[in-house]
Image (cartoon, rainbow, N blue to C red):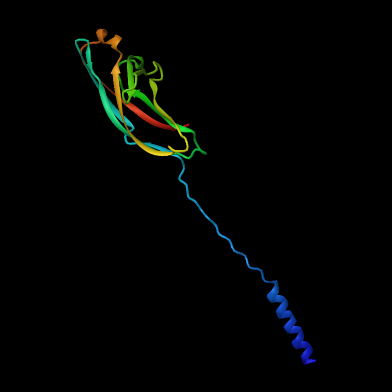
Length: 159
């Protein structure tokens, strides 16, 4: 009887050993930050001095930094809004990095200063930009000589 029990235990041990499976694998995790665009300044002072039909253009520098996942966003844009100026928004023009001057809208006092479409090779980056603001040339003759002040509120928006 003991030999039957010993044989049974031996067979059970062999069956258990053969039933064990070995599995190998790995897991790879990649952490991604959400897409973002940041500006070094969000409020830029505007000071324009007008004298005898001439003007000193207001210039400011802003740094733009972006990290954009193309699966989340197609790009970004930078929007400027005039605030605190005593003249109508339609009397002002602006440009970024020596491009052509563009007018602010009369009512909303806004303008798109820059935009970028993100491709496979430009998802991250930085850029230093110069923003210039001036009064439209056709308004200079009708303005009183003096200094005109205000602000541009900058906003970065994902597309």
